[in-house]
Length: 304
Image (cartoon, rainbow, N blue to C red; front, side):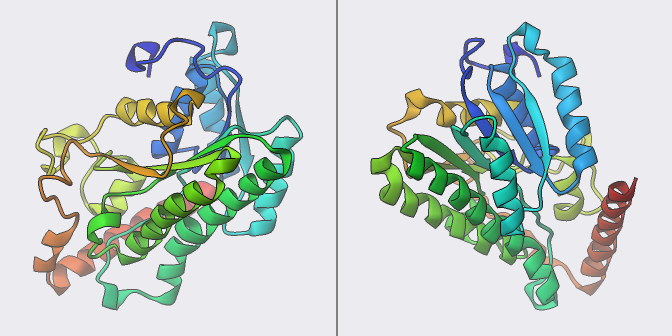
């Protein structure tokens, strides 16, 4: 990403301090990079400390502070653990209060709902639903106590409006965050803390694609057709620009909104993974095997 990919003036986010959960990979990393390029000091958190450190170094090497960018600080934190969230916020606040938060950490995979185990359900809900709420609550309580303004952006999906067949744990959890966004926008807005959400269409990343489109690469030449009238998937810079706008103080009157960024796919009737209703046992067995392989690869990376 370069400054030509961003629609905003250099230095726009100078003085802003943003935490991006799940900021070491995928969509989180892209949004973190866009924010720091515009001058924000960004904290990225996730469970894999090594991945976070590599991501922070790559961003800082590509966009040094001497060129007008901000700092990127990695913090290993498992947001499934409220005590770990509290410790992370103590570490961040020791340098200064946050001005914004992106709830991006997530997990997802396709499965027939009748095949789900309680462990599989919890693997998604404990991060997306519980973890995101406790990160929001921890930051929010500090903003309220200190009478500071804050902006929270949660990364959702258009499934919050239509349901998500074969991704039920994620759809349920994201829908909960959508209601959190609406509820806290009304409850805390009068004290300067506002809430919005982004509902992306397909923005392919290797990790998510391996679990949602098993056996297919996230590279452009192998992506299936999307339901978007534009006939393409999203570009990372498009998501980064929207996140920057919602986090900047000059968007303060935008509160309680969930904004789709899907090329019009939601309006055109795109319905996620509904087509998988035609799959039989053989297709689901192959998908499970592929997803298990992706999970094993991730576990191996954590031990390196």
